[in-house]
Length: 337
Image (cartoon, rainbow, N blue to C red):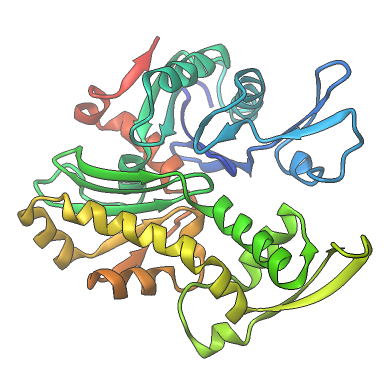
């Protein structure tokens, strides 16, 4: 395809997704890069790099360069962004793309400049930043430009953001650095405290995906999965069988922090917009929205119907790409040429 290539990028703590208009999501890989510490050469990026976490020799480091949705290691993040943009450009265009990157709401000026500069250095012709709740709402198909209140809750890897949107702008929002990673940490801590066994991050993530839940249902209680960890007292491997019921107890406190974030946002919202939200419901997206029972828990605690976006993992990237056709919204975004 000749002509200009426009990219929407969800540069997430856990995963990076790249959306191309007319093509859809063309990159969806973990935000991980493996580097040879002896010579600073990139060994692997994305899926292959994630497989190395916890399994590398001392001279290879598997790094997640983003923390809580923002750049923690600039040089590594730049290398990763260059890799993903080049992947997206393959066979599509000979021209430098316009790029829109989703960022956490409330991102600082320093963090914004770092992302804009990284996008530019990675090969973009022009870089825009869009707040993730707005991108989520666009990607979920909500009518964000109407005088109507829409509420989205984006539960990512590093942050959870609840926001109310009307007339193409975010009216009120709350952001906490509690999300998917904290669920993993809670599982690790639970297994350590109850069973005196240490498990790794990748194992905890698998447990979360396979049996994680936050709402009391018999079908969730009966879920089971096996894990192997290191017993603290002997230093030897030990196999455990974990159940859905106990994992719910392990991660429920983290889930309740997300509930409180949603409640806080509703409390700050003008009454007329709350009325709209009560009628239309709350939309949840992001990887955390796939956790069993999260919609039911939020609905029970707020008294408002809660729906999962149709494609919750891709909303930010898709919405970031779509905003290039929304001139009124685009004009308000931070950008660099």
